[in-house]
Length: 201
Image (cartoon, rainbow, N blue to C red; front, side):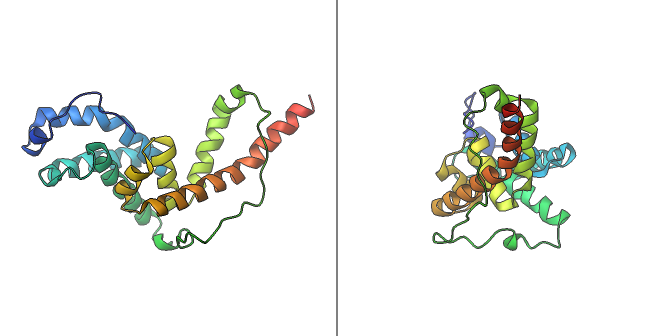
């Protein structure tokens, strides 16, 4: 979870204090932009989401009731903006059909796992590995991707992720598990190839 690096006055924000709003933008622009970029894969689209998020936040701050943290509320607006943009870009794919219906009893079983525990740490930190992870994240269905980005990249708790996406904690856990399994399967080939290359040296 992103932490408030500065103390923001919700009352001042609700009252339309532009200086306080500027501090809000400074504090949260980075994380919101990062979320949008991970979801959309386009700097231009991420900028649009960033601008729309703060525009809507400014318009609706007077209605903010404090049921969640300010950061979670902003993530909710940004998530909705990113998902709406994805739907506009891909209207032929019904969003509700992007992944099987959530069911605690339904399991996703990966076809293949590679045990990459023997790879050195620098292998995972390389720019090539980071690019492979980013590509794998973009391949996730949108409603799995948003949960993974909020929970595992932005560091929100299960509860905060549920609040941001209007999901139950059970649904968040189910989608997060599916996302992690799909990523593990997707990355198995990449790291399997890396292991093969190292074994042949």
